[in-house]
Length: 148
Figure 1: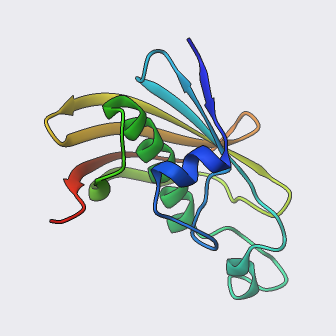
Figure 2: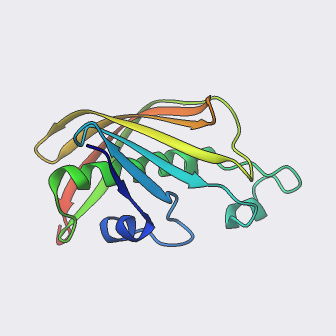
Figure 3: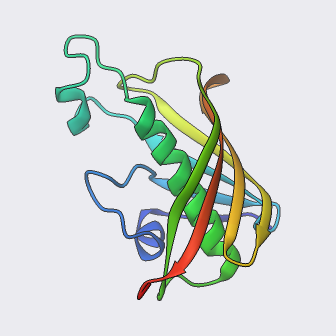
């Protein structure tokens, strides 16, 4: 059963806020094993002011962050709560940037849960604009208590 999490739901799960919240909507697919996140990239993004003025390109590290935030929503959906938890990066492997992302693009992040044991989640992530692959990575995240 598919489940769509809107921006209000995402803000209940993730601590990120403007200008660092980089996902607008997430669809949970295939009972908590796959998520698809969307980011509407606009010319008003603050990072475009200083990243290639006159030829605005979304920084690759922010594409990775958008994929990680999508994965975070997927993992929080899997464990059922985020009230007393945080998800932190533990590693990023096999990172490749394939094509630029520019204002007007809709960035689609597809994340697939590879493994989830204890507090560690491993996710294969790919980002697309339309059918064009723009970035990919394998990321590892750790879920911690907020007090840690």
